[in-house]
Image: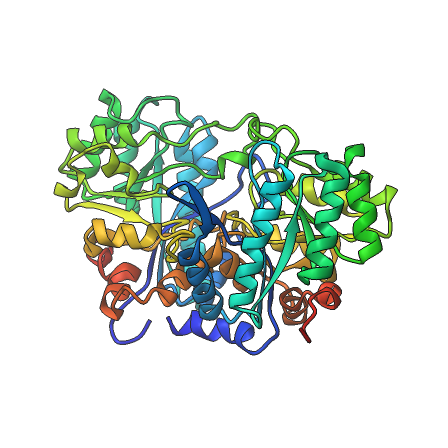
Length: 272
Length: 269
């Protein structure tokens, strides 16, 4: 255990932002509430692994997400941030299919609640024209978009509108001012496909969250994108997420760059 | 590891995988990352042997590679070669005997890649022979996450029920089950807990309630004495397997040492 303890000192001694985590709601009788047990557990995980900030969202993961459901989800995530204001930051979740209502919710969350980005899920692919209003609002407010993503030839039939890297690249090239995080390059599926698709899009970064811990996956991510375009994340796979970066054979300088998320640090609102 | 406790990785491979480039897949490279993680002994099979029609060609190349490595290198890591056995290929009985004589420490069965179902007659014969030669049998659920598999790769993992069928038919053998979610074996109502010679490596299990706490469920269900370390290198980074134990407050230091190597040390002494 001494060996892993020594490796963890890199995390202990450096600024560390987890750009991809979630808190969830739970059903209690006929109402929903923030899952506080999950939140407490997440905070423990952050402390175990020396994370300075957790950036979380609460997406509706199946079907259309009506504006009132998004608003409820965003209020729950805001409740979590209020409970741990020095540790947590939030991303606002919307379904772009609701057009102007989605835009108004982004304005509410960013301007009134201090959220630092927008989370999009699998309701529409990133290059769908329906995304335009949301993208333009994010550019105006200077906040990044975290888009759920993945590619597989043999899987994801239940998520036909999940974005893959070619679709994200199309949106990124149409809106070069938009800052996009392609979620969890190591979240399942063909990570090499995901890397190749966004390699020439400087306004797209990726996070290394997810349960895939393939040797070489993080090294290849850095090789294709450069460390400054790689963010640390876990997305529910805390030990796997931390462990994979500990095991990655890249320079310590690159690891520190990924841990800090230097390119995205300005979005964090550390002085909050 | 010091104070007479050693660290044994039960789940590793050498060689090439047909569906993607591998890293750290030579003896020297794998030994380097194993040493970096404090591993003393590491069970390895040949990936080529999985895919060759005659698996023995891959097995023989593996034993040569690890022997050459041990002669030419001062690494503290010891390789424990496992032979890939295809019980549906002619002469497999002799292969097991030969592997024992050559110094292999165990065998591995790959039913999906060799197109049979565990528990069938031939796999039972292989299990009997392995038991006779005191060779533990390793069975891995699958090599890659199913979401990323190549369309020519097998689409599913080894079914738990087929593993149960083999073990209950040939309980005299010793088994190391890797890459499975161990509790799947018990959800099916099997009596696998009665078999003390079955070892389970944990894989993607975690320790955080309401996020992923499957490791906590495992250590509450399966005797610690039957849980072992398995990294699945060079497919996977080794560090998550150690980090989980490091951060697990629900497990004693003695329990951690048991999982890291004590539980299985006697098989390889």
